[in-house]
Image (cartoon, rainbow, N blue to C red):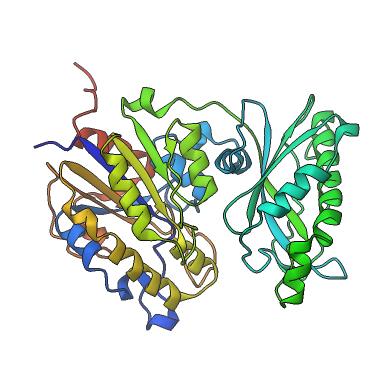
Length: 411
């Protein structure tokens, strides 16, 4: 029997390093994961460098690699992908940025780069769209809120470049930076001017917005400043259906992942109640994925909350959320005629509070798979599996071969 469908599940940032708070094991090892372990026991496992050994992948470059779009060829910056995910239609040549709603104090110092992990920022985004005017510079803005504290900005105009710096100091207690052109090209100078003016005008709007006034009254950090980074110029992506002959959907609360799916031609399926954080309705997300498999060949699903716990350095929270993920995945055990591919996109060690280059676990379970002896889904157990150590860009070719969609190399 050969599988006809593919569920491609990315457990964002789930892998880790030994955690002191968990007696020297990783959160994935410490977690009780009977569903993931059964999938491992019924499949073939390995570990994977999503970009290359020793390279710390971003979520953007890793997902591109996992989908078979090597970032060395296709990556032009995170901003355009994030913007697409928020609903801004990015056409070739548009300049895009990812943004954080942040908090600055009376002295102009950044006190929280994520504004208390605020959510529900649509009213702030609307006020910025209505109030910011860059027409004197010949620039039009498109601005949309994303999940949580995230947002995206796109600039439209003649003579704009993408070689500019960020205003994000990358730490609390510091002044936001001035955005500067990275070259002498007038196009980059124009973009830097437009960005600095956007930040100035949006800051005035955010400072007195009723949502922020209310947050301050409640003792919450206001989202009174925008940090923008990840600049890029929108490129061109071959469509997934043409590349692989498969129809597909993407299910993700993270706007970046939705954006990546959309630019390669996957249909974005919004799922109410999914947030990209530990409070996300994972049962609804899994139901949606199973439903999509009834009409599509390929479904990419991203579950992100473990990554946030890693960035916050909270090993126990990460372990506990992994157990929540595992319970939500139980319906996958009954899927028939489906190849289930599960991996992380990168490691997010609690000790580092950022991505690392540590390889991630991967399992493939379904009809026709050679089952190895691995019976635990964790970083060390999977390293003993039959897939051994692969690269992210290898995963789609392996998947296509297992569903009999690959082409012979040679006569």
